Amino acid sequence: MRAIKFLGAFILLALIITCSSTKIASSWKADDAKTKPYHNIMVWGMMPEKDSLMRKQVEVHLVNDLVSKGYHAVSSLEVYKEKAYKKLTAGEILSEFKQTGVDAVITMVLLKKEKEEKYYPGGVFNQPENSSGNLDRYHTDIFDKVLTPGYYISTTNFYWEAVLFELVKEKPVYVVRTNSFDPASTERLAHENGELIIKDMMKKKIILDQMPPEE
Image 1 (cartoon, rainbow, N blue to C red):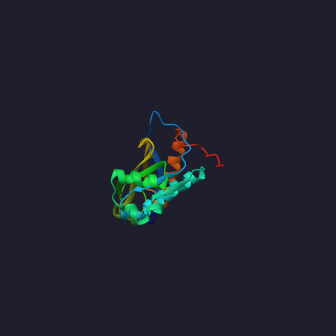
Image 2 (image 1 turned 90 degrees about the vertical axis):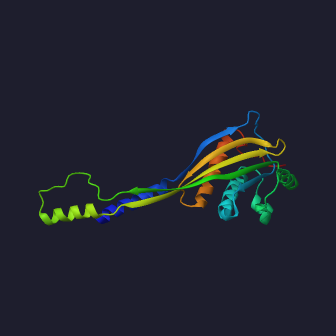
Image 3 (image 1 turned 135 degrees about the horizontal axis):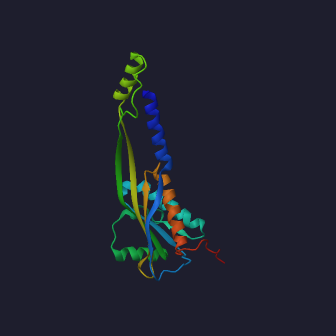
């Protein structure tokens, strides 16, 4: 009986991990936004140095997704390396981008990281016990149900905002917020987030489904 309860907890945890996914909470595009063949897009993960691994994963996945559509895209970590975490003024940031030949920037900001813990109690009676059995069987069933401990399942949720800025306009033309509910790993989180953002940008005609090859 006790083994069955623990097996149930394990199966429930496995289902939660398998069903973890990233979803779009909201997205917006400027009224004057047009589909453009950007020539050099920089992906900039705006995260502290302690999240450097996740930043790298998020940037690389989104860069690769853009490259698969024929765009030239670069990671800010790849370009700036140790300077990537240096605090710059707005003017310095624009100057850096223009020197790099960037015409659009996609920023990725982790708005919030939230941990939740849900308790599943043990010792729950789903139906009345069959009292027609012998005493030792009845005692064993009751003992298992009453003394089977509860268990906790912990989840970690991530809330993101991505913004596409055009360097010529110096203002955002597209904003999307996504929620990642208990991803199996930050690698999977970065993969799902990148794919979802690219699909939404194509749906809203922000980027081309496929860039034509350069002549």
